[in-house]
Amino acid sequence: MSEVLLEGHGTGPLQRLRAPLSFWGGVGPDGSIIDGHHPDRGASVAGAVLAMSAGRGSSSSSSVLAELIRAGVAPAALLLETRDAIVVTGALVAAEIYGVRVPVVLVSPDELDDLPAGRIVVVDTDAEPVLRAVLS
View 1 (cartoon, rainbow, N blue to C red):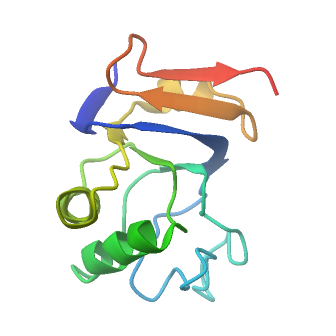
View 2 (view 1 turned 30 degrees about the vertical axis):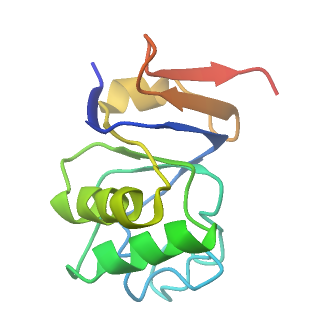
């Protein structure tokens, strides 16, 4: 069962990353994955419901995520299989400073498996269920 780590609403195509991602050094200012060693290099996280096992790396990732949110090129929502205080901190800082809220939800692998890749996913932390796929 999903657990809300940061409230909010976000809708976008589901993008599952094949490996953890560091926003610091891993995501460019346009929201594209620039980490040369990441298997999803070149993909854009902008506007996606981004699903990943966890974040990776530096605590600076929180400030990079906050700036991506400010610039409008961040994921629409974040789905994590493992708690990640750095990712939540970045989203929380953006909500407090910029007034833009990107929900962060802890999910099980089974919940992710129920969401077809590429489909539009709605993340609404005020609704039940929190995650739902819509026909595209």
